[in-house]
Length: 181
Image (tube, rainbow, N blue to C red):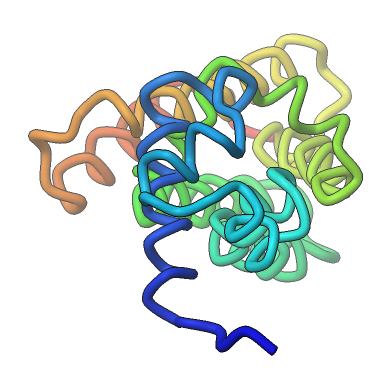
């Protein structure tokens, strides 16, 4: 039986992240990742059952934080929901901005994969929370634009510190969101 080499596992993850960033998830093959690491495609498949499994492991910390935020939002309404959603999502996006940047332009397609199916429902709950659970269409539109914009923006400002990016995003959110009710 072949010995599992932890360094190879980590090297494959790092190569996958680089390839996804350079050519996108869809534009990256397991063979591309294997070639970058200097191993066979079979070695990649020994460590990861599929390209989806690689992506799932790369995104696992961000998804865990998203689930935790979703739990914190349970039962909150109005301004409390809005503030918790805004601060929590901004923190999550800033903390995981390099991983989120890997998926730019591919969120819709990725949500169709079984490993990420629950993210769509969480996104809908986040939009509702950002809008303070208002039924006003404008509040929901603003909430969706902010949510998508925060995720897109985090990958663009690598020159900003986490604290500066967080402050800028929260300032924008506070100016853009109408008060609930």
